[in-house]
Length: 199
Image (cartoon, rainbow, N blue to C red; front, side, top):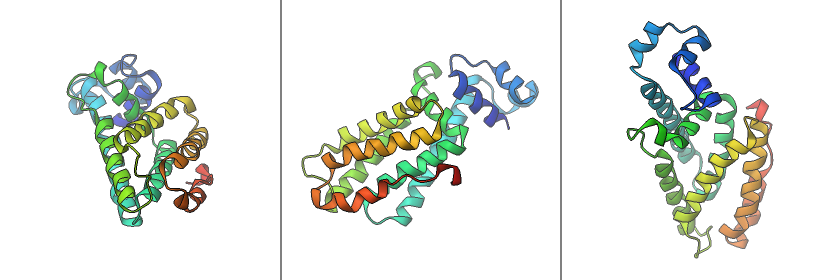
């Protein structure tokens, strides 16, 4: 309950604009209960970021079991993240807090950089599997993908359906430059819209 209240407030106001009293007032959390679990606003923010990390890590494990090829897995990951953002304010808040990490303090590691490394690994796998064009700079593309996804979150302005539309548009725009022409026809059907309300 405390983390959910914190996530909703951080998502709405950002780290700098959130006071502990705002979180207490949001769900009627007692001050004693909040301070028993979290010694500061920074500690609360770190807990929200950790929840976001845990969702990402679980998705990677789950998708590794479902997919043998890296490019379909990357597309599926982006789609699952859209669904996670649709249903979980902790995800939205976690990404916003990672963007605000300079305000929170040095104890927040730049997890988005670690995620970009995981995306680069998947892109390298796609190259080995014969899907990716040989001249693609996987590190640069992974960094772009992370920046684009975070930017699309803000562009969607809380509209989960719009976020799906933006993510699919990103893939339609970038895939022709990433994958070999012979593989493009196999991947384009994975970009059909899904009913996010049903997920």
